[in-house]
Length: 65
Image 1 (cartoon, one colour):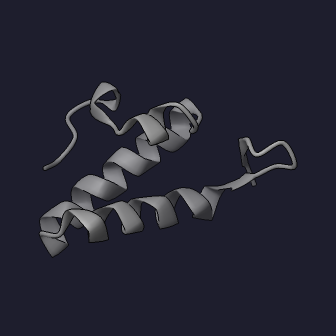
Image 2 (cartoon, one colour):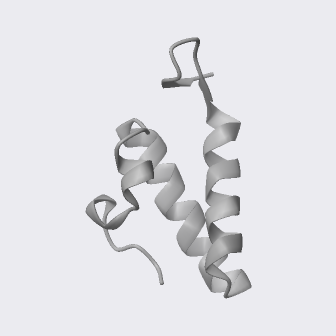
Image 3 (cartoon, helix red, strand yellow):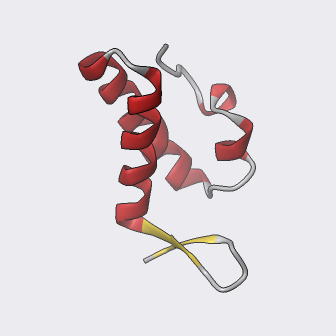
């Protein structure tokens, strides 16, 4: 199921990722969802896309690399 807006993202994404990272997650998830048809795979792809641009800092916050 593709996400139409950031408000639809899972709480774990909305509550932890900065706005730009949420946009990356949504776009990657939607693309992977179309390609793989597996929700679990789409979530993995989306997290990996976020991790290419963001990392967790010492306080466990997501920050740009």
